[in-house]
Structure formats: structure tokens, C-alpha cells
Image 1 (cartoon, helix red, strand yellow):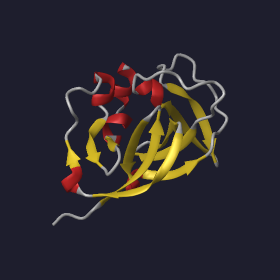
Image 2 (cartoon, one colour):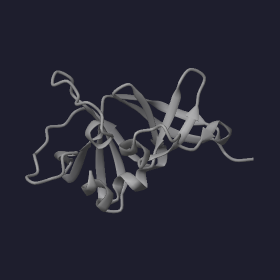
Image 3 (cartoon, rainbow, N blue to C red):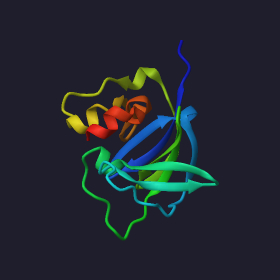
Length: 147
């Protein structure tokens, strides 16, 4: 019998996403950013997190979704990578959710290509679908630069 998996959840547009809680360093409110000239569109900027420079990735852009309204500030889900922390700019933070492998299904073919490459699969919950983000694919530099 497999152990239940814990996912840190968040919303991007109206989509409910989760990432393995062991990959999450911390969740923080909006931080001022420094723009990076000539960076890919999904790289929103750099933030200073207690002396650590962290790249901020706009998840709406990365997933091919509509831009966030200017009146709404994003939240930061700081994810651990081999090169340090990466901040995922999301609309709203959820909770830590425990999911069962029995509720897991591979990514459906109907998902947009821009989202499908970052989607490990989906969990069918009682009232909604939880999309599991593939942190390894998201953090690969070559994939991020292609968007």
C-alpha cells in the first residue's frame, strides 16, 4: 500500500494546482522585484529573499493563461531547486492537501500543450480536480527558455 502524498496547493487563474510539499521552501506575500533585461516573458524578475536572490516565474505566462489584473498582487511559492530557490508567482495560496495515489490519473490529452508539459497528472478530489505540477520540468532551464 502506498503512502498518501502531501501537496502544497495554489490557484493560477481558476485552476487548482499542487506541488509536492517537500519541494516547497516557503510561501510568502508579494515581494518587490527587479526586472531582468532580455529575460523570457515568464521570468517576471528577481526578488531578494533575506539575502538570497530568487528568480520569480509568472505562472500565468508560463502556463499560457491570461495575465493577472494589475490590481491583484501575486503570492510567492518558493520552490527548492539545485540552483537555489525559484519563486512561482500564483494568484492565491491553498492548503496542504493529502492525496491518495488511487485518485491519480495521467494528464488528459485535452490539456493545452503549454500546460501539459508541466503537468504530472491530476487528482480527482470530491469537488474539483487538483493538477499536480511537475517541479523538475518547470525548473529545467532549457524548457523555461523555450516558452
